[in-house]
Amino acid sequence: MNKKANLIDDIFIEKKVKESIYKVTGLEVESQWSLNDCGIASLGLIQLVSQLNNTFSGKDTELNLKIADVSQLKNVDALISLVSTSIKVKNNVIINQVEV
Image (cartoon, rainbow, N blue to C red):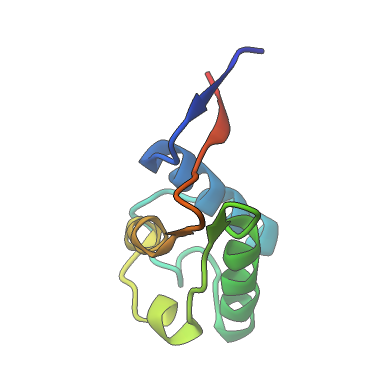
């Protein structure tokens, strides 16, 4: 398995968001699906936001999504975009190992 150092990119974020939804719902989802189509109700929304914040927060990055912001989103693609624009980089370092 080859790995390369890469800035967090949209493909990596999409994969991790969909994995987080899978961990909460057990469903493999499509980007066009609404959160309701994914089976995300109020309790699932709380779990999903927590899962995403944990997934994208670490030594070099921080994500602090709010339930209210996520609940207003149209679909999974909008969630991916929100995550992408909300990740904060610590100390100007953001390198991840991405499978290729």
